[in-house]
Structures are given as structure tokens and as C-alpha cells.
Image (tube, rainbow, N blue to C red; front, top):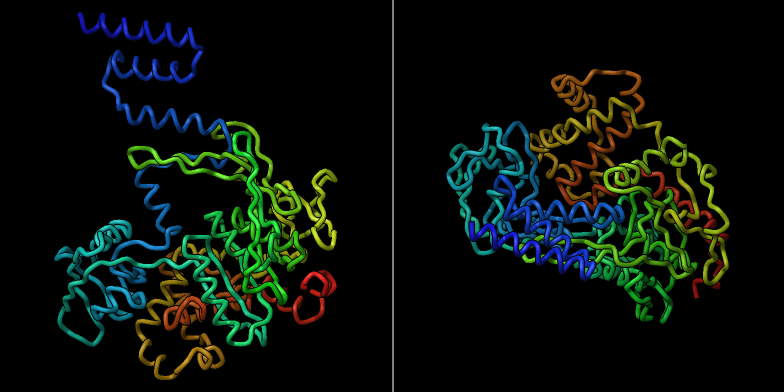
Length: 533
């Protein structure tokens, strides 16, 4: 009874203080204190606080979010450029983990794991044929650097079960998918995210391409959802002159901060084409906006996502994190490319998420003239005074409609239900040695290898097994794309991601448009020689 009276006294004191100060924080503390001490049933205080934080952030904007400790760890790994584990690329096929490739220089390669090996045991626990989830298998394979894991391996042509003990280590995650010479004097670099290691990877790729004779660059940011602001600034710096503004940020409590080029970039000369699409966002838009605003290059593709808000990560004591929007970022011409959002909570998130679907339904992804910006969102580039727009993503200089002719329901089902990837994995497992002997290098493979009728019969058989209804008209329409994907996946498994994109880019209309812009004199009609000085 005395304890109860003491609680009431404390609550009364808190209430009086809250009323005196009219302090929202005191009010929140009082509510949590009352619930945790007086509520009729026991409560999970951590969950109460988490829900309160989430509810507060939902009233703000679509990008202010809360992540628990596990989510923070999973979210940071790709941006920090690595995780700790055994270092393999794998594919689950028929309830068995099939090694596609060991990571070059990683623990598995050093221990003798080979492409095509099947991992059936982890620390004497069977993982094959037991319908264990991919997530559970990854948890067993990953671990802290220096820890050891014992694997049971089935290798084609070697009868007994092989055993390997692997010491886990730091495994790099690369943010550059591909870099190669796509045409004489034209290099191609594809960045999938802006991470801690992106600039270093970019510089290394740039050096290799320049040694190979590159003077012009196609920078592919299609599907790149962003990442670290500093990584975007470092990449943009490679293209711009000294003291040229890359981006500036400004908010209610955050004073304006300018980020300018140092003038030591490695690609301040030569022509540049940036590829973007409706999934290019945030850091991608910073790089694209800086290059476009300074007339340093041209942009090819479709209107970008439109994320112009800056989040500051706020670490909480239990390892969780709040990502709070503190400012907007602006391109050198003064554009804020953040697309509109309104409403609160789930309604705001739902409407925001539907934006890309609405673009498709309104025909924007097929027709550039369906997009209309008000004059208030009109800006001019820094050198040539070309008209550009803000307030909803970055508009390309050369629009490329999304190709709906090759994508059919039958093809989507083949991809979604894993038929394409499983067919390739099965083919590689059966023909790996034969392919390596026949094609000594990728150039030979690219010129001579064809997906034959027998391969496509296997694809259709697996599709039937997955109960995908065959549609001959759709199959015929998508066949060139299906064959390109199969060939590209085989190239990836035999070599790497650069080889995958060398094949897939022959079917990518934005890439082909970029080549036309550079090769047919169109580039010079937009960007004069003066802007390249």
C-alpha cells in the first residue's frame, strides 16, 4: 500500500511538473511511467517505447525511420563494404546449397572449396534435404572473424563426403557490379550502391579503363537506390573542376553546408553519359544532378525516384537506430529533387510507395511528353543555361521508354519462381568442365556460345514442374530476352558480374542509347566543347 501511495505521489509530482513546464517530454515520461508501474497486466516496456518512437516518426516524412539492432546490422553490412563469414556465392537448388563461386581470396577458396561443390553439412548438422531456410543456413555459415566452421562437401566425381574446416574472415561486398570497355575509347562502370568502399573501387576501375584507352565514360546508376552522402560527393568530385559546387544541404536546425569539388578528379576531361531510371535515388541523384547542372555530361534513361531528404543516423543504447530527416539537399542549380508527399502514417507511406505504379499507369515510363513540370520548378544549368527541373526526381536529357514488348507474364513467372536461375545452375553443374575447356576466355564464349533448343526444353520442363502455364505467344515474344539472361548467368558463374553485364547490356536500351549518343554526334548537340574545358 505504501508503495502504491508512493507511485501515485510520483505521478502527481510528474504531472504537476509537466503542467508547469508544458513540456511534451515530461508528458511522455509520465505516460510510460504510469503504464509500466500501474497497468493491470505486465507490459514489455521496450516494445512500448519502440512503438512510441515508430508512431512519432510516422508523423514526419517517408524517410524518417526506426530500426532495431538486428535490422541496423543487416542494413549496415552492404554499406560498410563487408561481413564476416566463409566467402561463397551460392544458390539453393533442390534443398541443397550449391557453391556458384568461392569469393576470390576468401576463406573458402583458400581452404579448397570449388565451384560446383554441394555443402550438405555445417558443423555435423545436415542442411541438405531438410528444407532449412536460406536465412537459417546463412546464420550457420556466418560468424565472427577467426571462428571456425566444419563443412561436409559433396563433389561431383569424388565419391566420399569431403570435410573442410574453414576459418571465417572479413568478406568484402563490392558496390561496383561491372567495369569494362564497351566500345573503342568508351568505358562502362556500373555502381549498385554508394558504400564506404565505392570511391576506392571506382578509382581502381577508372585506372584500368584509362590504361585500356578510355576517354569517354558511361556511368550506369540504373536501380541504384543511394547510400552514403560522402561516397556520392567523392564520385562527383572525379568529374568536376575546383570549387565547383557538388551539392548543398539545408534544414530548419541544420545550417547550409556546401560540398564542392577539389579539382583533383581523374575524369575532368572527356564525355560522360549517366544512366538512370525510376529506381535511381538519393546519392545517385546527387551525382547525376551535379554532372547535369554543370553541363559536364548528359543523362539518359527515365525520371529518377525523387529523394532529396537527408537522414542523420542517431544510435540508441541498445544498438537500434533512428534515421531522422534533418535537411534537404539541393543540386548546384538550386534544385531540390524531393518528390511530393502528404498525409501521415500508413496512408503517407502507401501513397508514397504507389508513386512508381502511378507513373506506369499514367504512361510516364513509356512517353516523356506525359510529364509536366510547373514553371516554379524550372531551373537553369550553370554553364549553358539549359532548362532543368526540380521537385520530383531528375529528368534525363535523353528519354528511354521502358520496354514492355519483351516482358510477358510467362517470362515474369519464369523469373519469379526461380526457373531461370535454377536452369542455369543445373546446366553449369553438368557442363562446367566442358565449358571451361571449350571457351578459354570470355571473348570466345560471348562470340560462339548459344542457348540451344535442348537447353530451352529443359527450361520449359522445369517451368511445367513449377506449374507455370505455357503460353506460346508470350514464350516466343520473350525468347530473345530469356536466352540473353541464361547466357549472361552462365557467364557470371564462369567469370564474374562484369561478364554478366557485358551480355545483358546488349539488350539494355538505355545502354544502347548511350552508345548512340556518343557515336552519332548527338552528345555535342547538347554539351558544347566549351563545357568540357
